[in-house]
Structure formats: C-alpha cells, structure tokens
Image 1: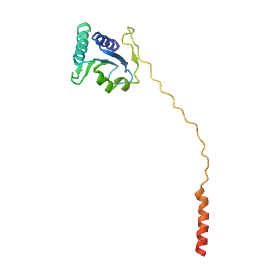
Image 2 (image 1 turned 45 degrees about the vertical axis):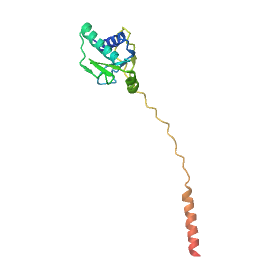
Image 3 (image 1 turned 90 degrees about the vertical axis):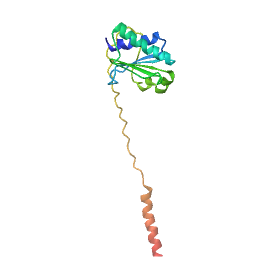
Image 4 (image 1 turned 120 degrees about the vertical axis):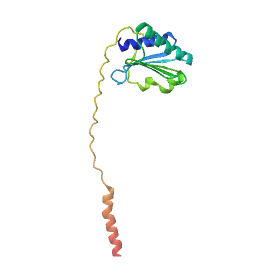
Length: 162
C-alpha cells in the first residue's frame, strides 16, 4: 500500500470520529523521516483515545496495516501513530495551537485528504536564483581631518616660537 493511501485512510478514519482541522502535509523531499504528516485535532481525552483507536483498528482490520510505533499519552494530549512513511498526530486544540506543526513544516504542500486520485512524486524544488546586487561605486570622500592636521601643526609651531 502506498504511503499516500495510508495517509488519506488515516485522515478519513480520524474524520469518522469527528476529529477537526484534519490536515495532510506532503513532506517528500523535505524530511528524511517520513513522507506524510496527518494532523488532526480532538477536543477531549476520550476523543483523543477514540480517534487513535479507530485509526489503529480500521487500518489493522480492513487494510492489514499496523503502526510500527504508537506514542504519547492522554495526559500529554498528543498521540502519534507511525505507519510506513506516515506520521499521524492527534492533538488537543491547546497542543496544536502551541506546537503549530503546519507552520513548522510551512514549506510542505497541503494535500486534499479526501481526494481519491493518487499523488505522484512531488515536483522538484527549484532553487531561486540569487540576484546579485548592482555594484556601487565608492565616491571619494574628502577627509577633513587630513586638512586640519597641517593647520594644527602650523599653529603649534607658531605657539612654540612665542
């Protein structure tokens, strides 16, 4: 099963348990750890548990996919499921506002998790060409201190003669 399919199914199962603000981020080419993030908000500890358990149960029973790692506690209000190349984050609203994963991974394209079309390889990132600043001519500036120095020497000599 492709990782994009796993990510979309996890988002779908989170939605079935009324998770909110479900987001699918494409991290291919941006992260060496995973290809996709699924981020969802659950408004209470019982809902955190329900969303996580529903995703695990449906992925196991329907698609024979088990998370490689399941981490987080209900007290932490942030649960993580690690499927092959997919990290599912189920957070409380407070934790989601605090950690703001979508801003942390702001370069990642947001995908429509309800889309049924397969997603190909991400378009390669093109580096922006560096714009060279126009060379500026240095204008010769007159040094007023240099002009004052001979005058000061002449004044000192005149004072010594007196």
